[in-house]
Image (tube, rainbow, N blue to C red):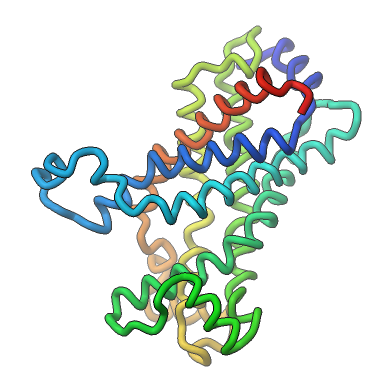
Length: 288
């Protein structure tokens, strides 16, 4: 566990939201690079020999569209986290407390909801359309335009409250877990900035698992609400009531295995990419 050297390092280091934004974009790309192959195998379970024929590139098919969404989303997330820390640090650059780290993570969740809520509403509708066989939308843009024309901006942002319920506390726990584990895993007398790659991967992977432990139930509720026909639910509380009645508490963790299988490697890669990008920015643009 880190000692006085780490405290001094943290106390003298000012957070740069701009660097966090750029490094967060790199983190998002790394998250997708590590997690997309698992999604490909899950959604397209071909025989093992087929994957050998297709090669590594076959595992990354269809990654362009998710990358265009995930990288900016993670950039905004890390920017919100950095901004929260900067606001709470003030001009002194003092070390932030665990509570302040959690609150900074919560702010990141608020920031990302602005783009995540409509994006996931559209994604869920297109996924349901693909599985149902009835084509109503020709693509994401057509879906967004139709939703807006039919019921206005409220339809595009349907499920925003559930997205906030999912992302605000889970992001708080996400960043708190990572920062706490980084400090815990730093050897006595060393700076947390010198943490080895395996320990960064361990801290990031555990943070990802804990994030989804509390994020999955509201995520399931959000997906049910966003894809439901108008009038099916009387409100967002009714979504929970209906799910518990029809599927029981286990329904809140629908898709548990697939989500948790992906969570560790994807988030381990995410934080590793962030740390490497941040060090590169500190060297390349120290005044940012």
